[in-house]
Image 1: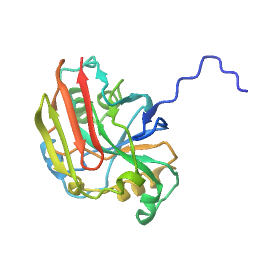
Image 2: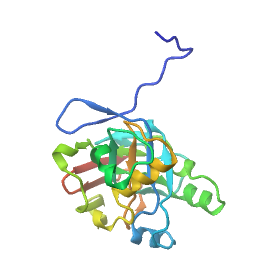
Image 3: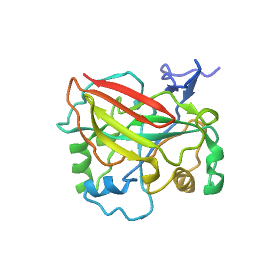
Image 4: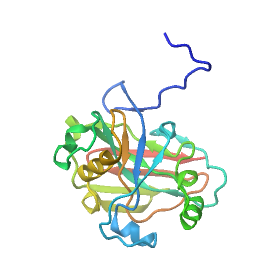
Length: 229
C-alpha cells in the first residue's frame, strides 16, 4: 500500500446514463473553433487548417443540474455547448478509420469560458488556461454509451438561456469530425481510457449572468441543465 504525504484527491468522474456507475475522467482535451460559423464570429478564418487544442483539468467536470458559481476575475462569462466524446480505449497514432472503436460514449457538455481573459491571452500570444481551465468550467450531462446512442455524424445541437435559444446548429457542421479529432490528438500524445474530448462549439456563444438558467441538448443524447449562482 502506498503511503502519501497528503491525502490523494478524489477521482473526477461523470455519471453514465441508465446506470449507477461512474466514468473516471483522466484528462479533458478541447478543440478550438471547430464550427465555421463560430470561427467567423470569433474573427477567424474557418478554412480546414489543422485543428488546435487546449485542456481543462479533470476536476473541472460538474454533473447535470449543477449550480455553477460565477467565476472570479471576469466580466464576460460565456456559454459554449459541445458534443463530448468519452474514450474507453487508449492508443497512439490512431487511424481515423479505427478511431470510433476507442469511444465509450458521448455526452452533452458546456465549455464555460472567461471570454475576456481568453481574448486577452490570445492577443498576447499566451496560453488560454486562465480563460478556459478554471473551477467548475466543464459541466457534462450523463454519458450515453455507444451501445445506446450509436456514433453521431449529425443531429441538432442547441443551447438556451432562460428559455431563449442562443446556439442552434447540427453536428454535421463540425469542421473536423470525431474520428479526425481523435486521430489528431493521438498523433501528439498517447490517449488513455478516461480521456474526454470536447469537440468545439457552434455559433451563438454569449454572456451569462448570476441567476441565469441554462439548458442545452444534442439529438439522441438528451439534455443538460445548469444554473449560474
